[in-house]
Image 1 (tube, rainbow, N blue to C red):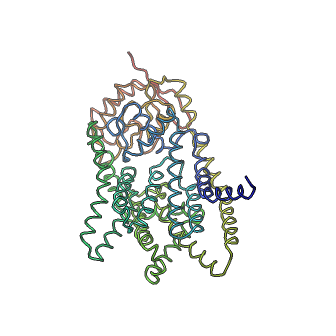
Image 2 (image 1 turned 60 degrees about the vertical axis):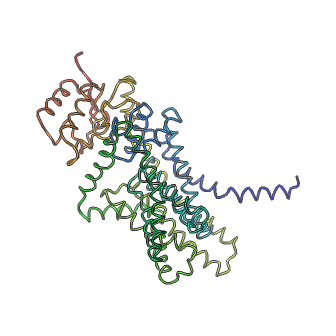
Length: 514
């Protein structure tokens, strides 16, 4: 083989792999701080999902046997990861990695198709770096919906082509349903697509085509819904599924009545997206897009559908993220697809301007590499800060105490919302309420639920009860009281002895007289 041929092959290999290597490296950079090697104890929400996944592998059914109020697919993803690695978090971390890689790759391909390579590189790099500020320990529902959002936007981009149009629309509906049953408020992209399709066909008075496309979109969603309904129905858990994943959430959202209370979290949460400039650049892109849509539509004829959907989607995402009235940073991950599109608009226009100034491609490539290096260097401090937070978030002493003082077949009750400790120790909760928030939720809880919980504790007799001093779940002090509840609380108090304090948590040990 001659040196010239070898060099040509290397160049071809680089041209094929460089974008994938860039995305792989970026995702690894984002996720390493959340890996088990740095973060030995999972965060609160992640702990619930991991615990649920572990219990699924032990034959239990979500909602019926373990209570949580998220849609079910996050639990099965965690069960899959744990099943692949014998209950190790590494399996779930690998699934996270795959999900984010697919999301970033689809996003890169979409923006490259619409706005060129330079815009795609900057948009995805900014999006990945922004994840450092919003991923909050990882394994959240909003991570797993990112590839579904980007894939649907990629599918709708050239959906007007006749080849495969029908199946693209069905697949978009299918992906939307999967997203909905992963996180109900992650469906902004699909609502925007629905609005766009409806406006387009109504404007052309093509009512038959509109009806046909709505049926195709619904078909994918109905298929997923039927499958899940059948699963829970066959396991006598359909009503439990509805009660926890829908009725509880309706009550939760209805309790937030103030517009200001909904608006404030948005303003605070958007700060997490501003760390590396994504929100600032994307809002400029949004303004430019609106101008182009109303005044220079011919300049964006190729990108018209995508940009129209993005303009519709942004306010929808902000509305959906505000439904709970909370400002958890990971909620804002659902905005990343639409923000990267608007970021792509900015860098597309900058790239066109540089070309108008006759700056050669090699010069633009060097500028791109330099700016990316500046962004990555600027992110190191932020990444290290979050990495330290994950590593030091605690509870290792409690985990060690539980493992040293209980058997694997004994149960442990964490009073509060710390089922991550149940998972970390692989000690099951004695009740289907591994955390007790629903028992303290006005409008949802009742005497029947509280008595069910207390009876589970008395019958299962957990080896330890650990009061985590959560102000939202005062220890053995329900807002609803009755003689039946009081008698059971007195019995628990009589059969558990205070052993001491670890960290901030009170440890009670069983002293039942057999």
